[in-house]
Length: 49
Image (cartoon, rainbow, N blue to C red; front, side, top):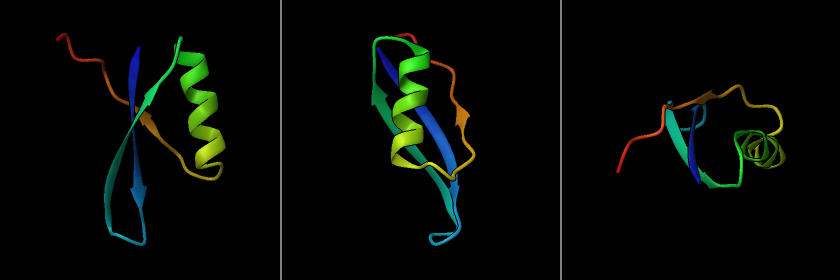
């Protein structure tokens, strides 16, 4: 499944959306925390395709 995380980038002064492929929401959160350990994020609602 594809999960999208949004976080504020103070360097770019804008919100960044990061898509992550994972088996579950918990796995996606772990992966995001590995990539950006100090960022607060918002998990975006999945879109029906």
